[in-house]
Length: 118
Image (cartoon, rainbow, N blue to C red):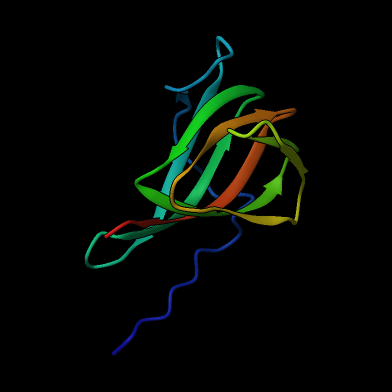
């Protein structure tokens, strides 16, 4: 049987303790995340992530990512120099092989889905 799961109000769910963002380019930037579901083979994960304002690098060479911004405003900077502004209610994908940077203009919360290559 396939089980149905409901994770509740993702704007109110407690993500736990905020910790320093490892790939930050902005001193003091912090993040928290809570994995809500993982596939049996470990190749897919969905959860909620939140981060304070600042800029950080991101590397999606081992996993693609789908994102839905719940709150906040970000600019995604592609490695080719182009960028895109994204806000609440918008969804986007970072395909396998993507690298770049994020600028968070304000505290941001998103739903994420990672799919690992292979």
